[in-house]
Image (tube, rainbow, N blue to C red):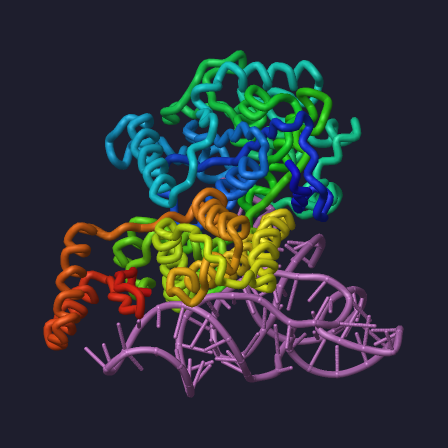
Length: 496
RNA sequence: GGUUCCGUGGCCGAGUGGCUAGGCAGAGCUCUGCAAAAGCUCGUACAGCGGUUCGAAUCCGCUCGGAACCUCCA
């Protein structure tokens, strides 16, 4: 909290100093996945963005309650009445219970996020677990005159809402009149008073599997409603941060504001944050375009678009190297560069833990290097404080890495930094990398064997049996490792 | 058509009205049995055309190119 954090607020279209409603507590809600299919890499980007924000807020002293929902209700594929229910469709296709579908993809989602070293949220509520709250919310909105029933469905009345000063469209910058004029012809519009009105409760057709009884007959809640109900329940009528992908800005988040405001009389969110899209050849990665790939395909390299396998930490590093509000274009070249960069960092992580401070009167303090290190530590914070600029943060991390390497290579004596700066370097480098950016060392198998082979290498080296020496080196290379033959010691490292 | 955003060196990708991130690739040097690693040095980019300014890649306008949203979507 000593850090003046600025965040870009979609609502005001500018960076604002972050001031929580009840410091040191922070309430953060992020729209989670619809668990009817595997999450792809584009989905992952958004979740990793907010994982990093969660980590950073915690790092600077906030107590964060992080809520990320699971959408498991079975919303329609299209907007019309005849649209299929996503989860129900998968259930029929695979002859499973809808909840088996939900369970399968929820487990996969959790496993994927863990692989990327994303921290679990504080609460992960599901839409089906909050049916009572949603039905109550619909009732309240009808009572307030902001919603109406029609053929067993209930719609939010946007014109009425705006007459009361709601300001529908303010998040996405849309003008109501424009929206009214440009709404396309869609099915199921007849029962709405206005094409813009959105469903908060939907009547279930006979073949619709996922259904719940309600005062308006069997049905299921509208897509936007669950987020309003669950965020209010766990974070209050007004909370600090709401995040999600850019593609949810309209209409989903716009509708959330309308519902929240309609229910409680105040705008639910102080800071709206949106992560930009992951693109492939300049186009948004999405399932419908067929250009998406799954994390699993990435780790094995088993996708036509992939020239090789990339590890979870490589991908995390790759994403952190860009700003969350910029689109990020996927390419093998970029991933390969990220792999090298990440491994350098991982080597630094491995090495720094072995470094210890030793006082030495004969070594002169190097004020310039000390200032450089202190500057980089502050620079990292400044970058993250500037709307979570992880790219610049990483740049500062590489400055720290340089000194870590110099110490390790004996090109720099710890005493030149002084005990305080040495400790700052060591602590900050590990803390920033592991705790804030969530980048861990990906250990390869069989470290014990590696140490044994290294002992052999030393022996051969002493005896100047260079043929044997080269053989050992070749063996290491096969394992994705390299031998570092330095003046003062011999060690191994991950091949970059 | 409407709303919004982007166009940076070989590649990826930050960025502020003047002090020119970072990673990868490339060149040179130190070190070294050879190599690798590490450190050091180098390459001076901001789509095009106008304008504002002492000064713009950064502000404004236009042109060209690309994207997102307007429909389920992270």
